[in-house]
View: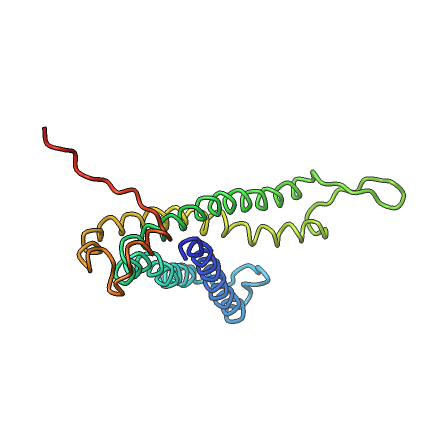
Length: 215
């Protein structure tokens, strides 16, 4: 369950980026259609409504982060309340194990796809034609179009999902620590479902820290 959370969180954040982008596209199309000369860049056209675009981005960024935020904050609370402290430990171990490798993968992959587009735009990619001549594949080429698609996915990977996974791992651990006494108080740490200690311990072994003996 814990190992699944980073992937679920990533899917939610990537979907949120798409939703926000589509709202911005609709607004841009609306302004192109309602402001004469804006699309053509004719002199004397009315000024675009930048404030409206900023408002759309701000509202979408706040609204779309509510579901992923609730996922991160409620997961350890639900696990500890119903299944006990050992279930919380298993949840954290799983999320940390998969979250670290997923965050590293997304940051590196997104950066690589972003740089691939820049690499093509600088004219660093060439292919041979039928006559053996090298043809530079710059802007407008099929390779550049493919690189733009990769950059479209790579930017939210390295700028949104990758960094956000760091928050997921830290916030889940902090919430579990803050609510630790509360989880322990429910059926002596076995949760509302009264999960036997041997069952939960087998699923998620925990290192117990005891107080130092008094000298």
